[in-house]
Image 1 (cartoon, rainbow, N blue to C red):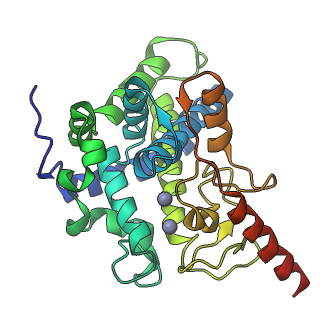
Image 2: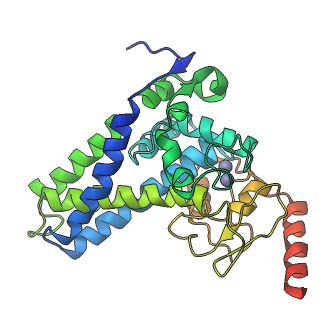
Length: 302
Ligand SMILES: [Zn+2]
Ligand SMILES: [Zn+2]
């Protein structure tokens, strides 16, 4: 199949994206109505954390910021896993994210809660007509790979495949227990898990920007934006909520800069590095780490 790797790439229209988003959220409420087994919690946690790692470690730290290197095969695997999380293709993701960094919290930021309503920053921007397409020419570092461009166009195939696999697991095997059928497995392991993973991504845009530091968050660095580090969201976002750190040093593979800033994505990347699957993880410069310590000491004295 030949694929164009230049120009503006269009995929599905926004009504389909809206419909999909509504369906997956509403279907998650089905957890109160379908037969339950503890195995469903394990399945949900597994599909939640693997796909949250895929958007934070893949679409974000790898495709958007090149914060580490890997093989072309693992790059494709990351893209497949990220697409299965229903956050569209990795080139689309990275393109819009780079615009966010370039114009953080200015009027040109695509999803700043400072210039938009909270719900628009949270998810409305995703179905805004101006944010639907991918400019492949702007993204040559990624669009030079035809397989990634192909996946970026047909990204919706991958959540669909995952849904069928999870249905089959519940319907045709007893691995999830005899109580659990295909529908239960899909409602928990696909719908609820996808909804939670999407929401984990959405809160980075709507909560770690635009709010003053408070009980759950602090600002280590005086960046030219309104970012905060949110400790409450650190585990469900797998480290992405150390967002003030990230805006201070966006290319480092580590986003929880200090030992107390739990960063599950970074720990997984370190394990993958030990296995030789990823390499050249970019470090946080020593000067930035010291700058953060100095600023925290000043904060605790004041
Ligand atoms: Zn941001
Ligand atoms: Zn970023």
